[in-house]
Length: 129
Image 1 (tube, one colour):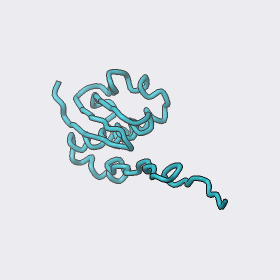
Image 2 (cartoon, rainbow, N blue to C red):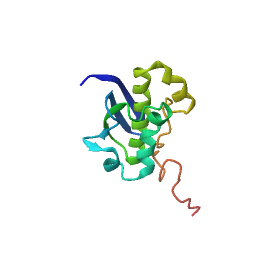
Image 3 (cartoon, helix red, strand yellow):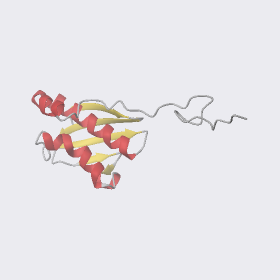
């Protein structure tokens, strides 16, 4: 089967490779069905959002390989990659996906822990004596 569009999505520490093919609307994530992989409906809905916006829910089969991070980050990475792949398929999708914010990489990351501190921002307890 030929890939119509390929997109790489990223969120936090998750990376998703998304392949869009002609089909009937099946979404496969790491070899499992979408609802089976993302047990929470919010995450499954998040992944489907670019297809809903472009009215292409039953036009394409989507194959996603995602790794790294947690479930929330993975869902965000899948959405980002799918939006990028749909732009490759049809350039007219660009404006609607851009306006909904699906093409913007969410750059929020966990701040690193600094030395001499209990966490990223939290200090060790101050002792005067």
